[in-house]
Length: 395
Ligand code: MN
Ligand code: MN
Image (cartoon, rainbow, N blue to C red; front, side, top):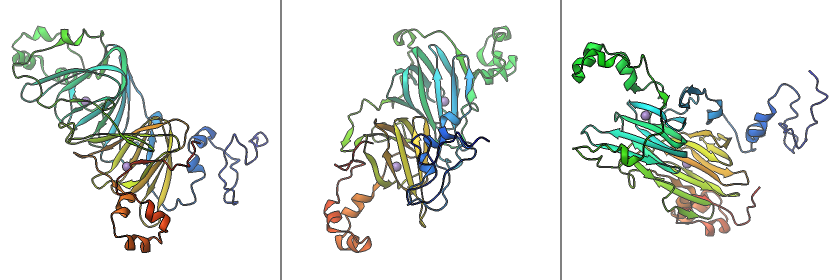
């Protein structure tokens, strides 16, 4: 190994696992500098990090790509991120006209449109249907067992799917083509009341994603149902919601309170401005599954007994926080961090450390953490999910 062309420690370009106080030392051996640059808080953890913690992040860029004519998909499940038992995620792209075929599954499906537009269809147990076009910032929710499809419109599309089971896999779903392929022709003939010859060209197996033509406008594809449409819409315009605004950014929440059909998965779309921070908090209902859309961030989780660890996150990262673990997320870049917080729950719920302290007898709080009067007088009875200390510069 030629070590002479490795830069000395302290170089601006190649980070080294050492702190100013002399802890650590240069890494002159085999290493992946690009990954070290992406994970500065693993390479040089904040001195307050300590103890053992399961891995809490996994990037879609480290996930297997399923390439099909018509589009691609990749998934981050409990197989990629073992701590993530409650929810699994799929990142999918469909070309113009590309189809995620007619299918259903045991899990609830929640989705957020990242780019482009898609047509989604579903039919419920009472023969009420749902056909709609969705665009960036829109979401949809299909209850467990409800059959549905997704098709890219003229500009194609990319979206995030989230399922309420960490062991889910999108390529192990109930597909119409798969069932056709594994049903005897005489049974299909009897079921539909047409001769076996009518099934001569059925698929030999699951199509999953395939290329089709861009569909006709929505009005031309409408299918009137004598039973009507689904009583609770399966789509919701999350980004179009008026956000809650705070000094450190914005929050939009979609759960069963404002999107009634979403009884199994709740979500918050959070923006953290440069220099801002998702405040110290935890969730009293379930684990948190995160997806980062833009920017650079670091998340620190606290897990009792002196255990805390910091993870670096960027666009495409899935983060995870076990139930009740304290945590916060800092924007470490120079653009806004946008990310989704997802919960296997009918509601979004969080507990603010600041608000908790503000609403507890002051004498108790003061003595418990030796709080200064400056701190005591700054506590807020109103929750600010995203904060920005006035003097905090953007990096
Ligand atoms: Mn599905
Ligand atoms: Mn959280």
